Image (tube, rainbow, N blue to C red; front, side, top):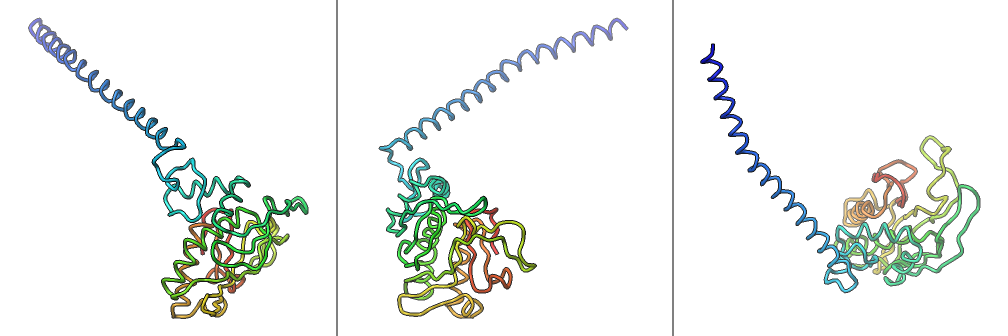
Length: 264
């Protein structure tokens, strides 16, 4: 029994010695990892400071602190810049003006607890295409301009060999409740605050006129163009409803600035 106890004691002593040897190694590894993490954090902060300063070498369309430029190439930063401009009336109007969008400032419209237009303006053209005069909010016009410049015009050139000279629509502001296939709902429509825009088709520079009601279900390039710009609108608007959604949208795209990313 005594010899067994001595053997256990010797074994325990060896384990303790090995544990003591391992501790400095573990401490050095932990210190190295902590030091590395702090160094990386400092470098990231320095790089961020270097890139976002006014004289940064980082292009504006990659710099999240710079204002949105509608005509700039689209990057992962663009959505943040669009979000920021959509929430600031002065930034929104500045972005539209810089891109050549015709958006005449108007006094805000308040017609009740559920209806009205904040940061209101009269829109008569986006970047290239004309729009028959319509009152809407700046954030809606901004998303429409991004869609027209980055998706509508490139698709027209690619598939139809021409530009779009005019976006055809049936308005933006309408103080009303939502409409569904079941009838009128109790919730207010996004049109009640001009947060939506209804596009019915386009007029091309070569004189052709394409409408969703007539050309959506075709098999040629005209239908392909309409389907492509529908998909493109889903990048800029948070809720998009088109002819494939239900009969109420058979003749137009419902392009909505607010929503949860639904596109159909």
